Image (cartoon, rainbow, N blue to C red):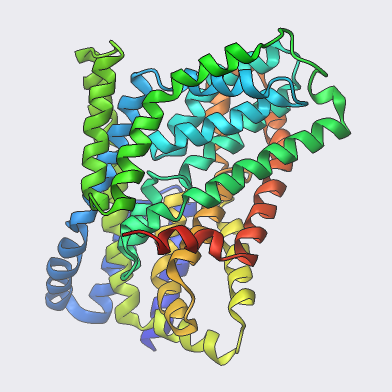
Length: 437
């Protein structure tokens, strides 16, 4: 049997195993190992595993994953969540849908601290949803706003998925990849705010016409001082990488240390909290690296089978334009997002897409932003929609799951509008990395 067909069959078998409920990391390992045994034999397989899996899994840049996670958990415990929402509330509450806009802005600030959408979504669910419901906002809009905007943490550095993408896609500098997320993140927030404003103007029943309380300019200006901790973390991470003073991995370590210092300064330093942050970091890191090791093994199997090269040759022979190819990839990710977690679908597809991208000469940083944006959308699409279930876990029976999914619909449209802008204007993603020292 042709090795290419064996590779394609292995991909189909992998999807079936995942749909049967086997953890994705284990599914990748089992399928990759079985395929390597069949194609290369036992002796060659173990040689590949020793040199390939160990070498890639111990890549120095992967240190950024636990460091960013630790920074995020410590930042949340240091009390950086509430000031971001409170400041946004005071500045935007007078606008139609202002609290929902404030949630969008707050999620961007929190995304600059957390590295993952789940803790951001959980934190805002506890703060923003009760406040919006208290002020008379539609429950679907309130919950949908938090679920959708919490996913911004996937795009705004420090992003764990960005780290994984940069390491897997050889030749993509991690520092430039991280810096590339800032402008697309700002564009996303602007589109969210415009979309919320338009929705509320078209349907005033979604939000009250004016806030319950009157806000003075003095209150707005004073509220900005609560953002100092987030600004410090942003300065250490983005400033260090952009100026060339730190590598991205060093900046991750310095950011985690800075978060500890901020925790002590704010008086939130407790050994119980520190222990919880370390345990959470270890658990998420372990799950992430299980996925990574499984993905490396499966990638080796696909490489040996020749499927990635055959796929690249097929796409080139079809004479697709880069834009048509990108649209096809986005559709694929939209479908996968209905069934797979974000990191899983990324690791599943990158080994096949990489040689195609090289042959088509598509900029890998630009492509990374587009893919990560689609991963962000995948965190919202039913029936999986991890962001929706995080919100549901916090609000419990106060808001029905169907109501949250209904509230998400318009935000998925906003995400696709943002995606179209990023595809039409690559410089939004590429300008800032091009200026990095």
